[in-house]
Figure 1 (cartoon, helix red, strand yellow):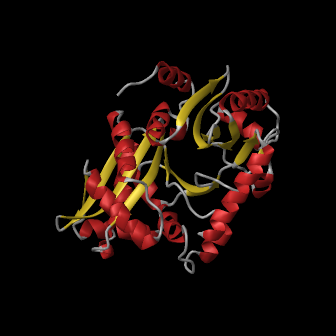
Figure 2 (spheres, helix red, strand yellow; figure 1 turned 45 degrees about the vertical axis):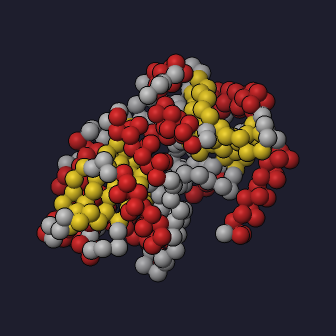
Length: 346
């Protein structure tokens, strides 16, 4: 694998921030280069960001900063939660303006790795940016504290979830590591058809697995029942954080609850690596009161996902954003009209 000097400079910068999100890692940028994105990095003394860019029409591009900018968490929190116009905020907009002019970028979407403290802050927006209706990553997720011992992690789970983990073990479900990406992709396609969500190409899952597995930051777990593979899970780690990105199951033997045991084994893998937080990655964007009042009634969208994930005893959190830095207001307006029409046609 060929890695550029820019990649190593960026990784050297990230070494100062052990809690950086995996989507700001140099390897994530390297991965996205395989799928039509160009990657640039901006660094200042106290902050930096990895920016993904792609062409949309002619010479024009759009750009995206996933889970960035990168800086100390207290500085990010002041920028978002306290409304303070930090030096970082001013220099960020200046650097983005220069980049947009140079690279013909219409706008830059920013989804910071900052948890908002209350609902009032959902409407807050840093100076120089505009609030966006279009998010790319899930805005709300469930984080599990896995720093405590196994018994304490299990004790925080819902009783039904603990029961399903033990049920899978009693039924003889076996969980093992695997590199069978072909089989995993077949499961993902089947899951997408059953639960009505879109899937990436097989090459996408193979590339992300091999790039991060080579660095020891990814593992693929497969669950078998009566020697038949029935479920799979791909988990990632970055520093002290672990992320559950991709999971799938077949339509066979769903009654043996293999996904619960898979998730538990992935949590133990993350814990063995020294991770203290496990991100279940995405639930419907509603407050906890509404989620708890509706999850038994709703079946659309991510509601089934929430029903499964809520049982693992984590904390529901909501991230700030999304925000856009707009370089070309007329074309930005046209882009939003396009997105609106696209949603109406879906």
